[in-house]
Length: 186
Image (tube, rainbow, N blue to C red):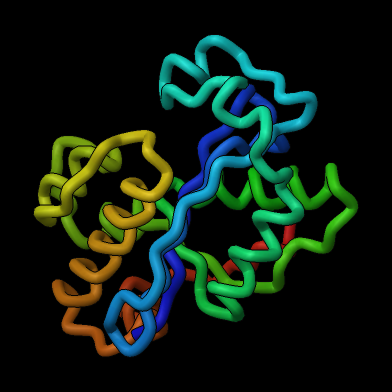
């Protein structure tokens, strides 16, 4: 079992405004790496509503590296692993938006959405928001902390795999008849 769970926080409504990234890498079913980064968004500009959600402010990222430096480091950790995110459309949109802004090619990695997986695995939950599903699987969560969100996402994927009796992410995809998607594809 191999995957890289990730979570972005953004400074504005723009997907190209990453201000934090959390990554949890699982290989052979064991968590191997866990890291968080603050990212200096373009012009270090923030919208007040985003700050209110995650608590990250311009003074915290003034001296932080920009997306390309952080993304290169994160990609070294993640390699070609399947990327997993809760509401993956948001996080993949951040990757695509930031890569476009900085003239970088997006990765060719496949990705999975744990919202989609949890909907198929636990149909009777009142909703499939990260706090609800994390609580259901017993994962600790400090919501909107990028590393905590990534760790909860990883725990959700593991619980989905266990619930399905699957031996791998690919087997889980087959079990739920989900079409594989890739970050570089639009």
